[in-house]
Image (cartoon, rainbow, N blue to C red):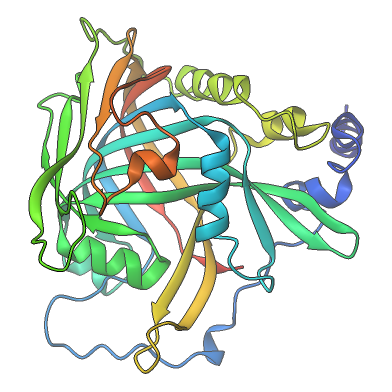
Length: 350
């Protein structure tokens, strides 16, 4: 089968709303949205007062990762996407969660810029805990919204390093917040805790305290497989996500997602800055997508038993409520660990 025949076969399989207009983005039939030309923007004013906000792209080196899938309430995720991403009719895409599986990622790594200037600064150790929602980007057309591509939405990211917060928020719009972690000694047994400066209740005289936000523990013996092949991890994760695919978004969704789920799915964020004069307004607000690719895979494996996630009900950090998770206890449906180097590329406004 030649390349063109393969394209037509899959487009026919997807069918209906999941036709050429939806799939051509990934097959190269149409171009992706163009970035604003560099010469149309003013230069960023580097004031030289101290540690720089790194320029992209960013290398995450010697990353120890552990990822877990949990069942959640897809309607809660839909509300979260509407409140966080789908906030303007002017945006090119509407982002819709397509599976009731939510991913929790623990990452311990060294971060550096690949920019010619900033890569000379060095490596910054960073620990991060994040939640990932797989969404379908629906493109607005004259006849309504049609599926266009997949994107990972990261509504919550906890980090232990201040420069990571500044760079993440300023460059991409990462919703990064400061936390303190008890980290695992070995990523093959990734038990950890995360503490934040938070509130159990809001009141005019309440004082923020160090509070335990979440904890991940093994449910039994915490055994894991080990391999130098990334394929089995990707396939098992994709199978689990597809198993919980929504059935209310029209025919062809499973086929559409199955084709793209192991490709390079971009990350998506809302980048905005509060206006200084009218703080109810945003002086800048755009959807940003950025590619995340694994540069080197060293080793990894699948956890053979579930892990248990506990989230505290802090009113300042309503993770369980917004993510549709059980605040008391939640068992993973799949878990994996990896040692990798990965690259976060330059973002694109949508």
